[in-house]
Image (tube, rainbow over all chains, first blue to last red; front, side, top):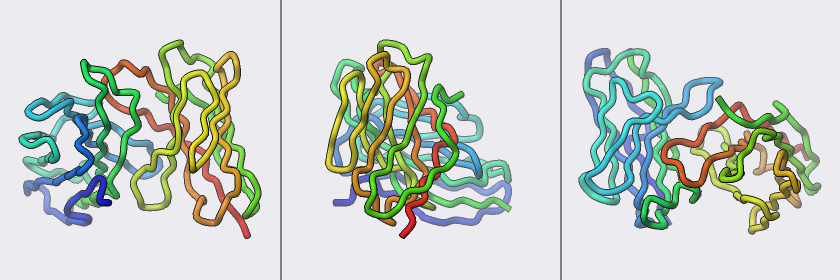
Length: 118
Length: 111
């Protein structure tokens, strides 16, 4: 009963390094999302995907790239990490009702990746 | 910005019902009301959602007023494990993109 699994759970990077965060879901969901959460703030959407091979920008996409090569996986990449990207990153997925409908379906979240950039 | 207003904190005695209010006076006809909670250091957890009618599931009940301008999440028998930040979110069911999490209500369940 895994649901949404994020790896790694913790990571410390130096400024300028790159890394990829992996999100995997086993619920056969069409939609997947990457959020970040900073202290005292709500979640903000970075990028999202409505299906395999498609991605779109969210509220705060700068400095991040994503890929959805397989339906069950959604990767978030930091090309050149900056201290401002220190945050907790959450992945989520949701069911599609088809034909673009289904954004009203609840999102299921992973437990997050805590990323510190020095 | 979040379209909802919630009290910043509430207390509830263990075993009693927890009633969490939410105001969403500008809600439009296509917007659903969602409730999520976030237990410290974990990912948000979906609780329940609704459009017009009251809803109940194994976790909670959602009561939406007839004019849809406010709602109440009810946890019928709160336990210590229900201590969390509870978020009320309104969202257009047909729109793409994110859930906008406001500051939520910090519910503390006390023995």
